[in-house]
Image 1 (tube, rainbow, N blue to C red):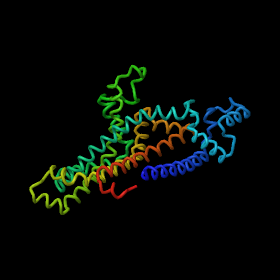
Image 2 (cartoon, helix red, strand yellow):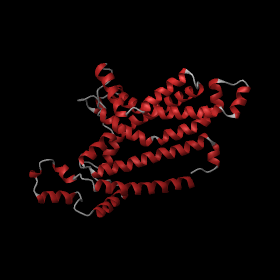
Image 3 (cartoon, rainbow, N blue to C red):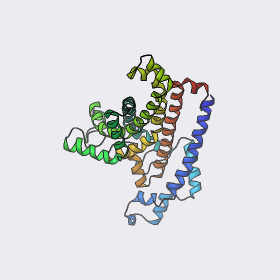
Image 4 (cartoon, helix red, strand yellow):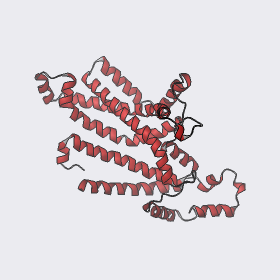
Length: 324
């Protein structure tokens, strides 16, 4: 109960701070939502009509009053109406997040599993050619921009080889109910591969360093003296110790995963939450921007909470010590 209460207080504090900072940064930006709503040709709208539009969206009031009005509406579950999509912000986020969720889950699982296995192999084969190859691969990935990697995959596998679609989440011109799961997966492969490769390097390198440290410990030497070796040795005596840092790092990467999804979705024109936030930023859609910011803060926070819970499942000592 104390654990849940503490996390709830931290989440509330985080959301309040993020709300205040995000609202005033967006509100005092040079973007004029009314002008973007009307369009480039301002001659079509009279000054009176412009004032009416601003009053309709509540933009005629002072910035603090706008924040108070928005905060009251959010507390009642109303995140406002998107200026671009002409629909409730909550509905836009829910629709776009479903597409992004599939992308991020596949990429997150793939990067965690592959990175963890590569780290174990490199740690067990320290100093060998396998270790050098894996480290070189990880260092290359860590220094490669995600958008450049996405463009490379797009040119290679879509344009030159024609194995996968160039972009979008479903085939163009086909109704959503007529799209098969096979087609959805084909559109998901390249964005998920781009997003997952970016996270492999950190997990692999950290797992390698932790495994090398574990293999140099006294209890591992004792286990080797009893005849244990190879993956059996790591599985029985080292897996739990190297799992905690890997879990911590991987769940802490939720923020990076969300940021990477924005770039991947833009390159592949994938209709997810990342593409929505870019469009909202360019279009001055303040309600949608604020809604996505709050949602992303909750998303990252939930990832950290899940990591804390997994710590206690993996290592009972943390559960007994009452780690918050």
